[in-house]
Image (tube, rainbow, N blue to C red):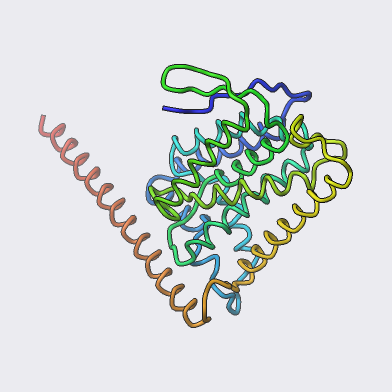
Length: 310
């Protein structure tokens, strides 16, 4: 068992925004639990990022703002306690220093844009998928990318079996990224129910955006690289090009033009199949939930009848 537990990298100011994002995400998860099994499934289907629906060509009456809202909403939805706990641990460990170094506005920019890049990365490699993508993993992967640029030598506490050791951030994050890349290669776009390419896309976005939006004078790569004005400008140019690519992908998704599809007819056919599969998934979930409810009702009725007979 290998798990990142924390870092020894104090901040200058309280990370209020990191705490607020963490608290809001937990509140949304508690709301999901309050819905019950069936309503939670329908809620996720309504607000999760479904690639086949996200990339559908816009038709008359379609609202592009709704697509963008779903791509954002997916960052606060989670599929279970373990999913939530893992993401919130990484947000707790890495988010505070990114917020402290970049400031609250830039922190939000990194978080949101990395999350959107994650959604688009997953959709790009699995455009016909009808399974909703949920979770803050992509946005938090962007924070790991930013942390790597800002604090590559910061000591990270890592649990290995029953022993806690400290390793440089670059080593811990490189090991994490290697696991994502290996899993994506071996298992595919969503092997094991995990959107591996979303993690990779979010991480790349965070690394690319940080040199672009970091305040003037912010050390980049610490002692490894003290960039001259020319080198810093080159880093910002590369980051700007990456940002433009992300913006282009986002515009493509919202407008419904998918360059990965050869023809619009093929895209429409895929979408119709996707809608049917989503409907079938919802009906199957509904049937299961109703069956369980009926079983519980039947059992309670038998117990009540037993009480009456006694």
